[in-house]
Image 1 (tube, rainbow, N blue to C red):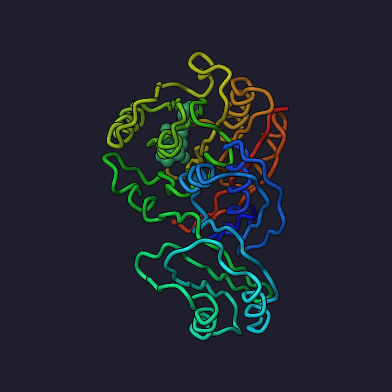
Image 2: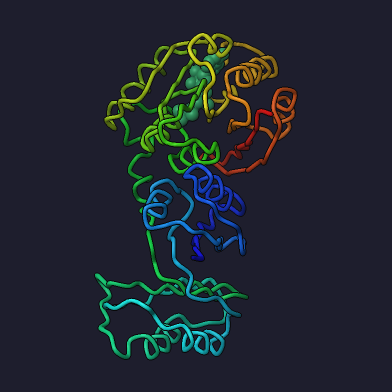
Length: 336
Ligand SMILES: C[S@@+](CC[C@H](N)C(=O)[O-])C[C@H]1O[C@@H](n2cnc3c(N)ncnc32)[C@H](O)[C@@H]1O
């Protein structure tokens, strides 16, 4: 089947990268047919369970559809293709349109598609058996059947100020989840965050069924992380108060690392010069990470990524504007 991922426009490359890493993490073979800022289209043999697992993971995708057809984004082309692509299953229908084009009128398109697709079936806008989705970009129209929706309010409900322990260093849960996904960690594998702060990355990994291991130099952060993880009823965690240089005493051969380095603006480095701290951090990461596995690291400056290259290979860099109008650079490293 051809699966269509309707992507968030919050970032140009991160949403696609998150889907591709999650497909690997879920063990789903897929080949990319088309990829742009609006959608990712893949060919895959996965089933409903696989789609459900993906929907539970993803932070920067809105919807996963089974593609019916795609064509140039003109009303004539869309309607002509729709005539040739009838729906195979029975049941009531709703037609919805995500229109990112400047030249097509959504209501007009839905009316016209309604004439084709609702001839012998009931319309049910609130609880349809089938949701037909038209995703229209300036150049291409994609028509698909909704397979799964991603409830992004789920991430909003876990924002820092809604957790028992808060600090300004807390990452937004969507970013934390995307970092976990980029690490390609699978359920029941172990993910380490050696600068865990309030535990935001650990929380997102733990909610996916990953075993989580966190450490931080500050005892108050460890206590706070514990409060946050308990608040979400997570059990599969271990936390240690440790300097980055001592992490190997607690962690060995971890499957994935996702972490946000301290950057001396709102976090402590205990007076240590950042370059030295980062060198020690990358050394530890390369020591405790299994071979061929990934570490996703949040940095305040793209140039710092090169420090890590002495220990690991850079796979990709994603600059993301944070809520404090700072740009963080999320760098995916691989241990060779
Ligand atoms: C940017 S914060 C991490 C924020 C975290 N991702 C969150 O969502 O809350 C960096 C953390 O690194 C910790 N830290 C600073 N120096 C450290 C060191 N030498 N060893 C271990 N942790 C350290 C700080 O206490 C801080 O909690």
